[in-house]
Image (cartoon, rainbow, N blue to C red; front, top):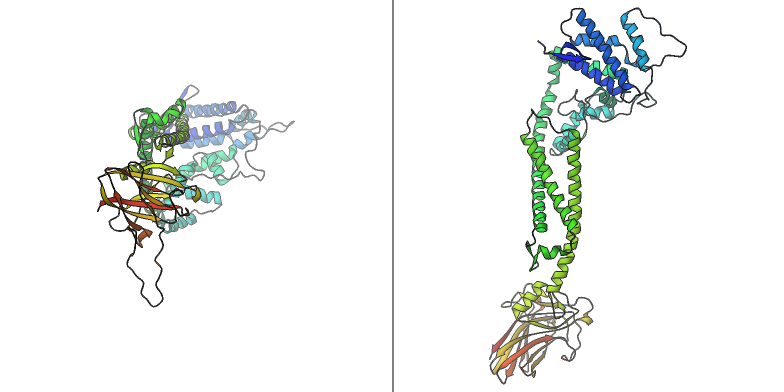
Length: 562
């Protein structure tokens, strides 16, 4: 039982089997496609179609109720060898008379086909091969079969065995390459594609032969069960099992990547849109609370608009495609090729615009942030990082002079017991001779005798610890010793692991081997109640020793009542 339909050719209806109609449609499409680039090609195709209608009318007048595929095959053969359509009659000669109607019909139609098309193939008679997927000899997508044609390998079985071996050797990563090839390599759907896939010349004769070969192959496959059994051989089943397994793994990987990409795009899109469109959107950077309005004051409006629209398109176009694929009904036609290309081009343009403007905005925002941060963290002409000012404020230190010193004075590290592991670290920003500092803290004390207790770490001389009273009178001035590793005692004696202690004029210095820290305990007397200033400096007028270091650390400064 076959499905029968009715076709309209030049206003006349003809009942025809569905497979016969498909063959006739392919033949007509191939002729039109082949002659479309020739002058008068449409007229040639119309003449062929008109001749087909005449032959169908003859069949109906002879009593044929439904046109079969055998009738269409006979009609194609009666119209004649399409290659003869390309041969121009030699001048001065007359085509020989033909006895039957078929030959006469060819004589009448040859005049419409007397122009030779430009040769679509190389001088050696064969067209350059092109890579296609072979749908007629495929197990999955026809990638390996098409590749074997392109490489000149007669049997694709060789490539399939190699791929199966490499599949296990590459831990199924080869499946991803196969899927990419399946997506990117076009399928040979037309006789012209198949001819180009085999490297054969694309002529009207070759197209007709390829069309009839396809029809005969399909009939052979349907009519011979042994052919179908061969197609379901052991290798085919085995490869399909592997392919399903590989497709599952590749699908999981691709879906995971897509989910991650979509998540990243959503985060970037909403974050960028929110930051750019909300003036009261605040961020905390390095301890500085800045509004988006402050940061975007240097960004042009057009750049902000392009960036927002770009990220909106980057987010919405894929979501639109995903939702359409999920809820698309088969009853409604899909998007045409022009719309798809337009959406892809729009998405690429949005992505390029979003990335470009985001980079420009980030650059401007970065410069603006640096300016704001430097402005907010500059006090009395001295710039330090925000956390450095926080540390100095927490420890009670104020800055009188800071020159040639790195802007970050906060440090953490391993320190001796009972010492704060967060301390002030002053180091040169370049030339040590340009390093000048004077920091102090104030304390309100009653009269009496006191001791100042602190930990210091200096790698040179010229550093002074001083104390001044309310009137500016000096209560204490002490050189901060440069740490020196305790020398080994003479040979034969054990090294001393105890801290070395020295006492000179109420100044006690204990050297700790841990991190080169020195524990200083120094006494002073305050005659009257008042605010004292405890300072640390390397001013030359305060020290009797030259400044020859490039670093000093100070921590855990305490005043103890004696």
